[in-house]
Image: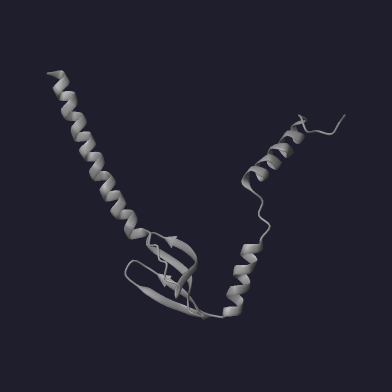
Length: 122
């Protein structure tokens, strides 16, 4: 009798998990949109809160700053093509170091402050 109860409870748990996965996927699908359209492109997005964001987008050669809320999309300003392309190039050429290298540097600096290995006091 107890085994049957465990089996039925497990069955309901699996069914609940399937429904939860389905609704989570639907919720994510509403939030994340992928597009391969070459005419419209989002270059940057800043979330300002729940269902509020500002994006820099381009349509062809025209760049715009757009404000997005749950029920509205508003054009805030037209942006100059040269300014945006310079910013995009600057962001792409920033000298970013890999996380592992940055983490190792922080650990070595911390270790030197404590007088451990890596200290050049030989």
